[in-house]
Length: 251
Length: 282
Image (cartoon, rainbow over all chains, first blue to last red; front, side, top):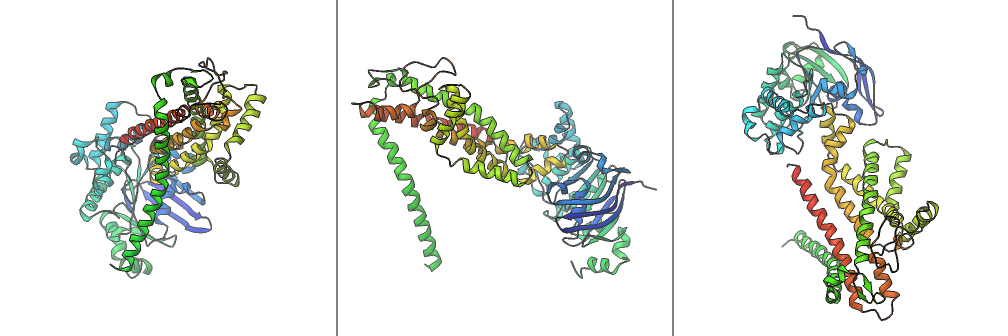
């Protein structure tokens, strides 16, 4: 199957003040694949991820050169609101707002103009079902989201992102604060979403990348060292540096 | 007991004594005002105009005057203060100019109130031809209240976790939607506290209203915003210093009413805060 590129970066270079966080990154990520990004701390993984929905721009010292294409179109043609609706993100720690489960998920659709109550209810229900949380929480949609367990909160965040119907979902170390069972549930959910969404997973846990992703990129000090399909990367990497990192000799 | 524990006990002991030293004078002052003034407080006192050269009758015009001034001040200072704080925190870029603005706002709260009084007199009463009027008085008090409201709002907005903003923006909300739905609701309790604090000060100040609105003796209720009014703090000053043979109990009773009024305002803000906190769910 030939897949078209959902996201393509051309010489993407990022700076925070004088510090260069990414050096001319050229990557292609195909439609409806799970692309894993691994690498040690400060390798530019998160900067790359957050460049894709322009969240880096929130820090005043951030600058970027090069191009990012979404479905072949230059990202600069989209305003922040449109772009972030198409490219959603799941943060490292479960970030829920101190309001009810329902309101957390309805927040996105509401800011995009959905007012109808029954429509909102439908969105909340389908989003929770896609995130495999519906059965656990359907009786307490109006209780505080902060009372959920960490793993449930993270799946609530996934439901919240799904509620605005994105095309791409970015995951920024989504399981770093979760226990193994919750982690497995999040990973399951990612696999279920595979056909409908393009997913990019940044993770510190190389095993997680091996479990979930189809293709993988290894980042080191702001550069992409190697990109290949996940099996190849974990069994027969081309670069010695990749081999060293994966086998735990550094990082 | 080891040395660390002894030192801990000592530290807590000192902190406790200092706290007591702060609270005791406040409680004593209030008790003193109550014991000296309560005998003169009656229904007549709070419902009638002064008579007999202010030595008898009530203080209704001054109560109404102060209430009107506080409400008028709130109408001007709350929207102006909150909106400019939102601008400073959420929109203004960090340049030398905005830093200067922020610094001036903080410093403005340290300006003596009589200076605000003089400024209000020259600007509103004389230059803008508002005359000594409720309008001029409210505007002067509002300018005096602004720095506190802006500072409190600024701090309340900055205390909202950055993650809330990121969540909202990452879902495709615009900057304004984010401020409106994801930041402001969580800042309201802090804004309320600052507002009530500054209004309490406005209710009790004499200097800013001295040249701009306060009437020495005007035993009727105001008819328009261009009327003068009596106000509790100025009335208290007048009867304590300008009227011979003034029964002391009446002065203290006037003070007591002013304290009660401020207390009432704080009560309202506590109720409002509780209401807004209930809407957030932790």
